[in-house]
Image 1 (tube, rainbow, N blue to C red):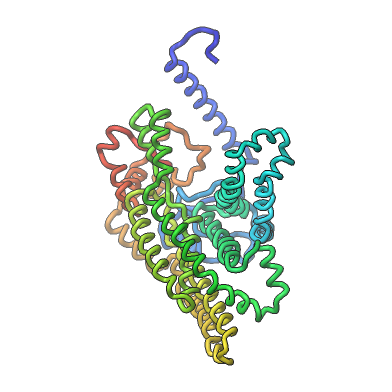
Image 2 (image 1 turned 180 degrees about the vertical axis):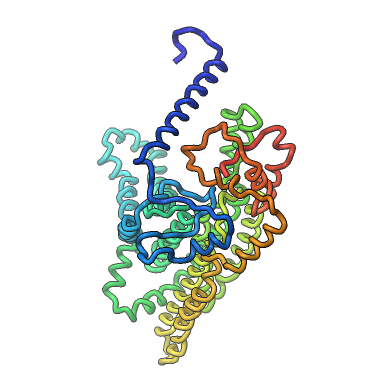
Amino acid sequence: MGLWGTKVDAIDHYTSQIQKLNEEEAVERERVKKDPDAIVPAAFVSFKSRWAAAVCAQTQLCRNPTLWLTEWAPEPRDVYWDNFAIPYFELTIRRLIIAVALFFLIFFFMIPIAFVQSLANIEGIQKVFPFLKPLIRIESVKSVIQGFLPGIVLKIFLAVLPQILMTMSKIEGYPSISALDRKSAAKYHMFILVNIFLGSIITGSALQQLKTFIDLPPTEIPKTIGVYIPMKANFFITYIMVDGWAGVAAEILRLVPLVLFHLKNTFLVKTEQDRYEAMEPGSIDFPVGEPRIQLYILLGLVYAPITPFLLPFIIIFLAFAYVVFRNQVINVYDPKYESAAAFWPDVHKRVVIGLFISQLLLLGLLSTKKIGRNHFALLPLPVLTIWFFMYCKGRFESGFIRFPLQEAMVKDTLERATEPQFNLKAYLKDAYMHPVFKSSDVEKSDFTFEEEKSPLVATTRVATKLSPDVHSSSPVQSDA
């Protein structure tokens, strides 16, 4: 602890410590390589051509469908190693358990919030913490507890929710970071749909809403919700301005990252490299941002035929969100992986779900008006919407999850003609190496540097990061 002992030079001391740790890491790596218990029944397989990889990844290789399962590997940056070798049966059990847990999380989420907020009042605090009675009797403290504490507690729970959903997705066993983001976004969208949209229309917790829906005949549910929708238009207009417009403004200002940068710059930054790392903006938060935008699209679809006065607020939000997020993606955020457009089918599905919900609620509202049975003329509308979704899914989804053999053959032929000396093994040798086996002194191959200099998404920030000026002053390392 620096209190006694021989005084030595700090640089020499820590250099020797680093060398010692490197030697211990090398010994441990060799031990793991020779340990038969460290071998897992899963692997990354590389091929000499794209055509062979596409055939292997997209076909059934064995007569027994449970003996050998293949799928496309995520790119090296996208691999989530903790879920790499989970047995198929265990995956099924995990996802069943998480589905049940998600149901209870959505419909019982208000119970822990109500319990904590019950402690956020004067009587609850005095009962649990009697020694705080003298402090609570102070008028200013009492007003803060009654005015701000319940809202802060709710905000904290909602801030923790995305982390809970991400943890649930990790337990489900998806092997890539992009798949975890997609599944977390789907769970968050379901939560928003029930607890914010339906919860704002029908007052009460989701559990009370569930009880209400169970007591009603199935044909009465759209009618019940449709009656409440016009009454909540003013609330949603306020919600769009407070949460939507303010959220877009907060996104472009980035006050929290600005404050964190100045704190790091004051207390932690010692070199130019440290300063550049302190400025690291991260990547776009898809599991939270996309479901929130889907909520506003849903509001626009629902209120377009009922309360068109709400549409200008939605249009302004979407226009600002487009401009702001376009700037953030191009000039601010760093993409942490490339998912090959795997997100679009989920986004399209949620848009169609919003359209289907809006049509059902419009039918429910019209059924309460004195127009006889004329509202039955709209019954084909949700049926056609479902047909349209199934048509799009069957017709176009394969383009997002499969790689055409024609395209693979064209690229292979072009590569052999333009780069006959290209050696793919030199890149693949270390591309899918587990982080445990990567040491700090491993030199990068020329292919890795070439890939870093030619990103798939050539953002302004990446161009600045790879400029000679930045490299000369503060070299940047990459795990790709």
